[in-house]
Structure formats: C-alpha cells, structure tokens
Image (cartoon, rainbow, N blue to C red; front, side, top):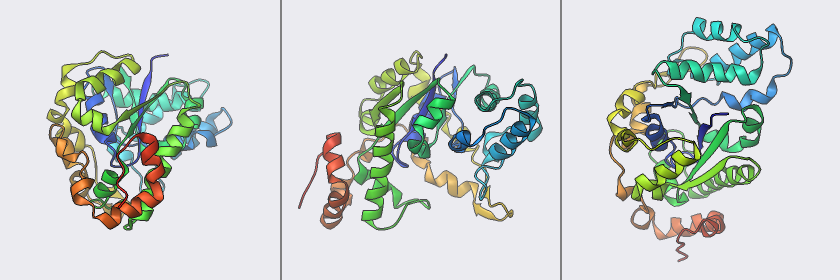
Length: 293
C-alpha cells in the first residue's frame, strides 16, 4: 500500500512545521489536526448503522468542540462518499475522508498530523496498515517555554509540563517500537539541517524531495486560513480563528535557528532543575544536554 505519513509528537515540537513542509509537496495533502482516528477501534459491525454512526462521530469530533469546519468538506459530500463504500468498513471510511480532503487540492496522496496520536499508534496501525508514523521530538525544555505562549498548555507549572512532554514522547516511542513503520526525527535537525532531514522523511514516505517543501512558508498563510473559529457544541465561541492563527505564527517564516536551545537563555536555573527532576532521565536517553545546577 502507498504510505500514509502520520506526524506525531508532543504539542509545540514542530508537528505543524513538518505538516506544512510535507503538505507543500505536490503529491501530498495534510489536513489540520483530525483527532478522530482515536475512536477507530470503537466501531464494530459492518452495516448501515455503522456507516451512520461513523459519519456522526467523525463530523462531530470532538463532541465538546467539533473541528469539522476546518476541513472544508460539506456534510453531504462526505455522506455521499461513505454511501459508496460497500460493504462499509471503518478503514475505508477514514480513507474516504482523506481522499476527499486531498482532492480539494488536486493531490493523489494524503497524510495526517495530530499530536494526541502519540497515545494510539498501535490502534491506528491496526486500522490503517499504510500508516507511516513520523515522530518529531524536541528538547522538552523548549517545548515548555513554547507552551507558555499557548492556551492549551497542560499546566502552568514546570513539573506538570515536563510530565506531559515525557508522556507524549515515551508513549510514541513505546508504541512505535511495535509498529512496522516508525521514524524518529529531531526538531533541532529539521531547523538546522532542513534539507537532509526532509530527505530522510521523504525516503520513509516513498516520496522524492521537492524544492517547494523548503519554501513551505509561502503557502502557510493559506493553509492556516483553514483554521476556522472553534465553537462549542452549544454554539458559543471557544476560540477565534485569529487566536488559533497566533499560536502558529512561527510557521509563516523560514526555519528560525533561535528556536533551538532557547531554554539556555530563557529558562531560569530553578526551572531547569525542576524540569530535570521530572524528565532529566528522558533528556539523557534522547541525548540532550543536561544542566544540573
């Protein structure tokens, strides 16, 4: 089967940056975060009831703040695509979604980028055997610094953030070891040696490197424009489109070397020590420099 690259990683680890780079390839379309592959193992029977349940689950995911508007696919178009699948199966239902999304841009292939998939690689691989997971890892201290600028930080104290970063990274590595197609790359390499790192990713996904991938930022504004205002299930605004755009402003520029090892100058000695107390072992395992005041 043709590989489907799925980008995973702790939030603020460069997953969106890598998404835009891959999406700039003329053959591949990568949608905004989906999230609904996490529920793929919840469906059972193969009948019309499953088809309708699948449609509802995908178009209303997540139930508290549906993301369907981000994808630009009308309900009736998706429903029609699902009705053409006989017999209906969950894997083909998912492929129908990605196929429709890629068709919007005239592209024959597709992928995904959703950080939370770090926790369900094995489930996804069992449903979509073509899944090729690209796990991008960033120094957790820089991740924590980046979280400070966001509305979705797992917490405001360094211990909670360090624990969350560890959970994402360790889960993806553990599950990735059991998946037939799993690749790890470093955010730092993507920034400092972009071409070589993209060549590695392209080889893994059975793609040829395209120069447009290195100019991803030219198309980033249009792609970020897909991020619609996010509304709660009751219709009230949870997050405006402008607020979502501000979270990803760094992707509008070429790779910025200043975003590597920023913790050395921006994280105080006390926070460095507190991070190390929680996740220093993982830093060492990954080969990152440790400072132990």
